[in-house]
Amino acid sequence: MTDKLWEDLKEELMLGVTQKGHPFRFCTFASVETKNSPQMRTVVLRHISAELNPIFYTDKRSQKVLEIKKNNKASLLFYNPEKLLQIKIVGRASALNDPQRIKGLWAEVPENNKKDYTTHLAPGTFIDNPDEVEYLADKNYFCPVEIEPHKIEYLKLKRPNHIRASFLKENGSWEGKFMVP
Ligand SMILES: Cc1cc2nc3c(=O)[nH]c(=O)nc-3n(C[C@H](O)[C@H](O)[C@H](O)COP(=O)(O)O)c2cc1C
Picture 1 (spheres, helix red, strand yellow):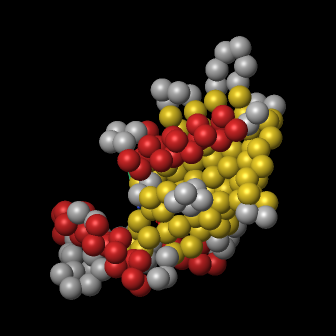
Picture 2 (picture 1 turned 60 degrees about the vertical axis):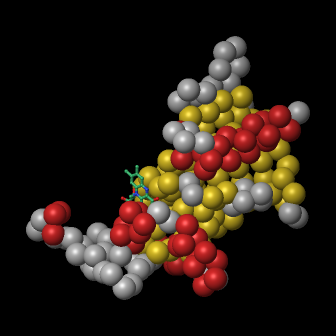
């Protein structure tokens, strides 16, 4: 019975990567900082594998990367306002470490966007003037982050009944159950 929802959520997540302007392109990545408080920020969904492992890109010096190195528990939240559909992915986040794979992904980043990962000073450093950020020509801090999910929650608001379901990955396969919304 939850199969249809599973197909629906998979399709929406794929569209987030492939369809221009799809609301799932932007999602909220939550991690836990060292003092155990939650941290959230918007990121761009760049890839999603057949196993539904999402990937976003960041700077390896960013707070989020430092956080997931200490505590890899993380969530990604997606919302489609046209469909009133929310998807929450819960799992373990890690920075990719296969140099060949990182090289391949880096080669696909449009030239104009590459500078986002080449600031001289680390992201979050206080500066006097936003127009005086220096970029490095010969070095980058490009860091793809992958989330390996173990739980995915689906919620669709609609009348007469909202639909909520939880999918858990056990022994490699996903099991879905409806929930009270
Ligand atoms: C529309 C939008 C898209 C963003 N996409 C990304 C992204 O893909 N990767 C990223 O590292 N930061 C992205 N950011 C910036 C983050 O939200 C965040 O401010 C920054 O990465 C610093 O986060 P941190 O200090 O928690 O690591 C985006 C911000 C906005 C407003």
